[in-house]
Length: 298
Ligand SMILES: CC(C)(COP(=O)(O)OP(=O)(O)OC[C@H]1O[C@@H](n2cnc3c(N)ncnc32)[C@H](O)[C@@H]1OP(=O)(O)O)[C@@H](O)C(=O)NCCC(=O)NCCSC(=O)C[C@H](O)C(=O)O
Ligand SMILES: [Mg+2]
Image (tube, rainbow, N blue to C red; front, side, top):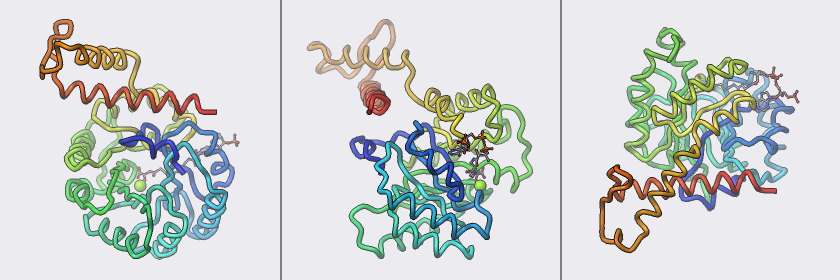
């Protein structure tokens, strides 16, 4: 699983595609998709009477020992549901890169799952990702991000949040923006990655592009997706663009000359550039190199 990610000092999660675990045809497509991560969904996209069939499908997927280019997360059913025990047993058997918990509202939910994962002696434990998709989840996002114990990513779920709050889906997600920013701030404060919500109308390419750009501007690392047609636009929007790469290269070059060695701030073409920008530039170039390597892999 996720072989290229292991060589990266930080994750790349521009495009995080949800694939219903009950849909065999969709599961078979994963190796050919250029997304950074896949969420194998046992929750909302799987009817109650199909949950076991969906788990069996995932056993087959993992028995093929997939060495995919992307992270593999399994989204389990909510804690307290009749399905979660069997879902967690599956996670312990299959050892995906991450387990995604839906509708998380309090930090103890993260710790409970971390505790279950820690009962099995494992070299490498699945990371814990949390869906923030209820009013309480948004209010407690900082506490959830600070739960420690393997929490690695917050994923916003606006479908549930709309259902729970009655806030209307207006253009530009106007009334959701403060809550989205609250999740971004919570994640960034605690070194936890943040992924924007799905965009349901997968045939509306312009609307999707606009929402990716908005998510990028808000500070999200990437977007949860529902359809393969959304992958390229998400990769473009959340990946470094050519202008940003050129700027990063100029910053690295400017700081590498002998006269800049003992300077913390320099003048680069009339703009103040500090060493913190150098760190950012180096990170961006590493990300860009990783993406090019992945595109060029055989
Ligand atoms: C939305 C869909 C049901 C549409 O599916 P379909 O009608 O099959 O679309 P297409 O005919 O356009 O599909 C073309 C081919 O692409 C494959 N496909 C489609 N979706 C996926 C996918 N997600 N992963 C992999 N492959 C996919 C189809 O099989 C077609 O293949 P082929 O027949 O060979 O041409 C469907 O896209 C879908 O089910 N999407 C995912 C739904 C899902 O995962 N829902 C849960 C996540 S959303 C969420 O979590 C919300 C959150 O909780 C919140 O509260 O906001
Ligand atoms: Mg949801």
